[in-house]
Length: 407
Image (cartoon, rainbow, N blue to C red; front, top):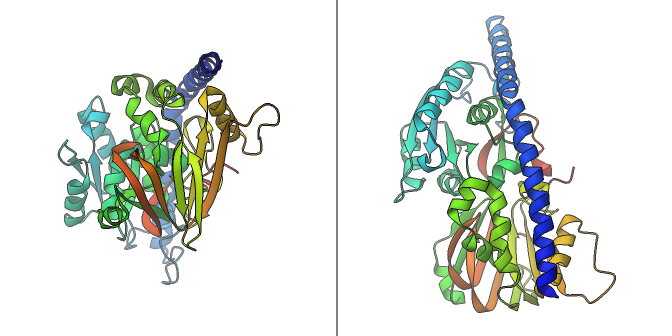
C-alpha cells in the first residue's frame, strides 16, 4: 500500500512542479529584459536627481549624520556620500555560468552605467570556493562584494563578510538559490540582479552558525560553519546527497523531487533530543531536524512560517513519518500548517520551536547539510543565531521581515 501511495504522490508532485517551473521560466524570460531596462532607467533618473540636489546645495536623507545605512537606498545617496559604492568585487563561480567572459562584460557595463564604479572579478576554484577570494576583495578595498553562483558560493562569501561593515550582494546561478528567493533578488538575469544590488537598500540580516560532531565535546570544539537559509540533518541531507548533479544542472531545483524518492522510504525514525537555551529537553522520534533562518522553498512553499531573516531567532522543525503515507501527511502540513490528519491513522509528527540557539542529539549518526551543501555524518549539532551580522543589499522594496512568504 505504501508503495502505491508513493508512486501516486511522486507522480502528482512531479507533474505539478514541472508545470509550475516551466510556466515560471517562460514568464521570467519574457519580463527579464523589461525589468533590467526599467531598473537602469529608474537608477539613472534617481542619480540625476541626486546630482541636481547636490548642485543646488541640498543634502540627501541622513546627510545630517543622523541616518545610517539601514534602509537607505543607493539612489538616495549623493556622489560625495561615503556610503556610495565605488568598487564592486564579484566573487564568481565559473562552474555556474556557461560564458564567463560575456557575464564579466555585462556586469562591468551595468556597474559602469548605474554607479560609475570599478568592477573587479575573483574566480572561485575547487580548492577555494570563495573564502580566499572574498578576503582578497576586502584587502583590495571593495565596498560591495557580489556572490555570483549558487548557495555554496553565497555561504563562503558571507562567512567572511559577517561581522564586517562591507556590503554583500547576490547574483544567483545555482539549483536552489534559496537566500535570493527569500529576499526577492531576480533569479534568471545576472544583469538585473546586479542592478537590484546597486539600486537597493542595505539591510542587517541574521546568520546562523553550526557546529557538529560525534560527541558533545567534539561538537563544541568543532569549527563553526555558517548557514543563511536552512541547516539540519537526517532525511533532508540524505535527499540532497541522493540528487544527481547532472540532473540538477538540467532541471534545477526540480531534481530534488527525484532525489527525495529514496528518502521517503529510507531510514527509520531515530531518537532525537532537542535542548533549548532554557535547558529544557524534548525527546522525539524523527527522520529529520531542520534549523531555519528563512523558510521559503522553491515553488513558493513555506516550510517555516516563523523563520524570518531579521528576527534574531531560528525556527527548528523536528519531523518524523512512517512510509509514503506518513510523508504525505508531513507534506500536507508544509503546504498548509493548519491541516492535520483527521481521518485514518496518524503516521507522522511535526514539532516546531522558535529559539536563539539549540542543541540536537541523536542516537544514530545522521548526514548533515548546510544550505544544500552536504557534510559528514554526526550525532550532535550545536546551532546559534548571530543577529544582524551581515550587511546585505536587497532590492528596493523587498519585504525582508516577511521572507517566510506569509505576507
